[in-house]
Image (cartoon, rainbow, N blue to C red; front, side, top):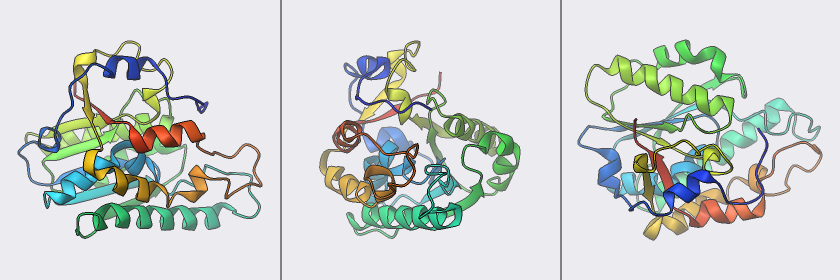
Length: 247
């Protein structure tokens, strides 16, 4: 995936005139929220403020982390694979703790599948099967329009889990990378649901700050490693979170 450098794109253009939604709109009437997350940080960047709002309502939240995010700096010698995994898991735990603490809630339950970063597509069926016994009424996952294979695979896992639920599910997909560039060019604007961070903006910013491996030059010995451009860090901290309703 090519990382954009500015917060602009077809999706954001379409979302600009869409009315904001409430957390009640995103949760629906069902019992419990299941959130599928490809990598540590997607939950905070893509739907962190909405998670705080859900926790404030005492919603039972389960987060399924598909990978440990070990693919972000594959050539780092100071942070080899297992060290990077541990770091990113620690960042994830601290970020969730910050989101929950903002509203005096316990952190969400986490189910970690430890699938290979950049290789989730090969494990869709087994991942979906492992989630078959979870109870939930609402389901959020990354939008299939995100230009990252693991994000597309997460949406496929959500499709299978939703189909197997055999009960009504309130489903929304949160856009992370698909909000930039041309990914949203064919998206019907009526499907976009903006959720402004509002009173939960500070909690989201505090959670983001724990992702030093992704948002700062902490790992500086891999010239091809990922680092979020500052303009996008500001965007994710301040802009609405964007959910996409089923077609």
